[in-house]
Image (cartoon, rainbow, N blue to C red; front, side):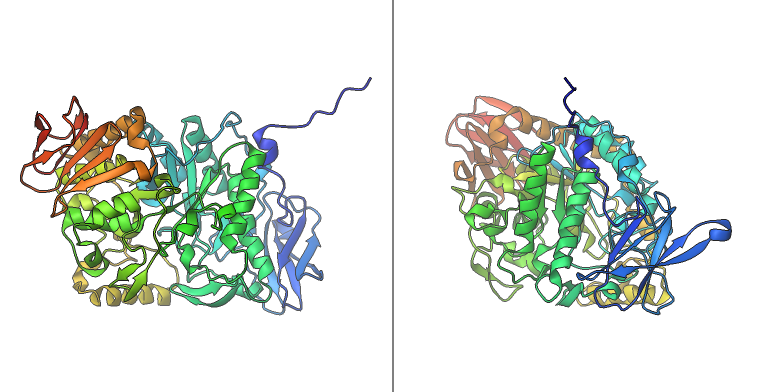
Length: 606
């Protein structure tokens, strides 16, 4: 009797199939439906330094060629019609010479993974840590991030969320000016460096999410429109992706395939989808719902959970409702209303959109009902906005809560952090409100020690005209908001990026060390006490004083008391405290009364 066929079942067998048309086996393909002629240019060495291969067009607008001798490591580009300029592959996996140079064939199967035992982490119950590779360390590389994982493990976070790492022009930037969705930014280390970081994170029990941007392309190196009708109309950042017009099927397919490739080939645990409200899509099945369906299928095949986290400005609960309930099927979304309410309460700022959140009811409402604007008037939009969340059906874990994120810091003129503008006591109170809420908490890098290094917008474009345009545009933007020109850092000055790099020496100095200890203790307590991570919004209540500065979070048999005022205050509880679990000062109790010092919190068992 013959031996039964062995079917591979490791994660690698599912995670790294050959991507067709990207040259691994010498086969190349590119979609250019409106071109009359497409040639593949191959780069080599010596006498065969450069050669062109004619491509054949099929009925779907794909051009294909088989190139003998090509394979992993081969550099290539495409020539469209009679244009002499060779362009990188829109689906490129590796851009070793920058976004204007040729692409390089990359073999995903060549990387040696060690995470075959990784079973993933669900987003519910998570503590997420958002970081920017280029400023997390002075080196600004994926390898350097891997060398700092002890800090994240010790802090107690469960998920690392990387800001975009796909290729953009220049060495330094936020990553939201990316132009090639599938190529890992070479100055960060390239594709294998990202795989090595994910592998190291999994070894330490950390899940990894990646921020991806499908709503626009950056201004330098964006060649997609030369290949095909990828765009239609405009959004706030430029051309809008063609998701529902003629020839939009391959565009949608490219987005979904790119998302699946990140999850499959890089073993990522989820994606954060940037500004999905800018994805203009009038189809019966929206792109996000289709993406959710295919990601769920991949998760089933891989045997581990995969998460999709949307950034949406719509305040629409359907974003996180299951597809079966008429929703888009996102695992979670960012909750800016809660951020704005926390920011206004902690800093007292009421300019711009913070004006809507100066109401003392804004913070308790955003904590318990997620959206402050839930079919109510938004002054900075000049209209009603949003819809209410059904708190009996939708858990708080589907909404990320945060004191800071890259947008809310970086879109300030100087990029000043909350740790620069509020006392350590207030920052710790804010952390207690976030980490003891039913929402999924997220921390922006350095927040956990009240970092004072700024994080303004910066870039390093290579086009001189674009450099000046960005400088002038940034000055005009903030001048219109009342900022003086000298308060706006030059985004193109390398010193602006260098000044944004985290100062890790602060972690060992007071008061930063004390703030860090408090963050660690809050995360550990959230993990230890089930009531603090309970996501059920309908079992969560917040009692607040008339001025909104004294709040009590009711978490089962626990009470989280926060006094945001500078003066001490007596807070009356519904039951007498039996045990003090954690505090950042010395509260005193007498019966059901708790005397809470100014700018402090206390977590009590009643």
